[in-house]
Image (cartoon, rainbow, N blue to C red; front, side):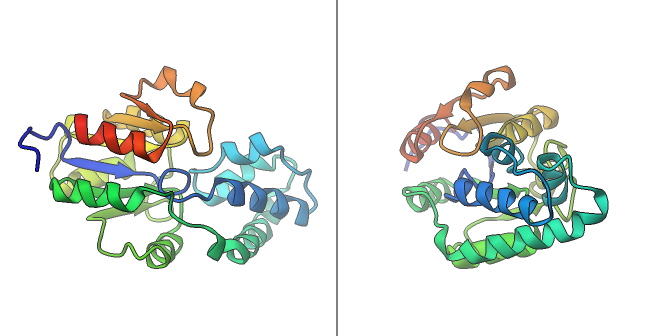
Length: 221
């Protein structure tokens, strides 16, 4: 085990698109849900842009022509389509060794996600990751991204200062949340957002694969 001091005590991960290979399925589910309630089908870019946000603000942003009185049905249709594909989603290759290596180095690991609590708990169970993370926050129990409250609550829970906290995500929502919380960030390019949008948010690094993320974290975190 490395004897180098840790730069970051708390490492928070986004879930979908960062640890879980779910971007394409979520994008299609958003598109199908909007069409189901009579809206104009969002482009792939528009549907993928909202991944990481809390569910209803995400759907409302992706479907500006859908009236508010249809939002409950829109949410129901999204959940219907997502559940049909829930078993088709898996962790990216290399995620388990990455998390194991970070735990061996005694980092606190957390999830900060736009999923609901029920959705995250189901995903952790499916991926057999219950007990791997020391803490988590979901969009239905605190403010959604890019509001910094998720990270503020996790930092307070573990008694960690912003300069000792690292947020890892695949969207500008994740990286903007880190900026808003005063934390460092790392972006991954294999998720929902074009990594060309990351530069103004000053991530420490942009990883183009889980292996690159693993190597950077072991060298710099």
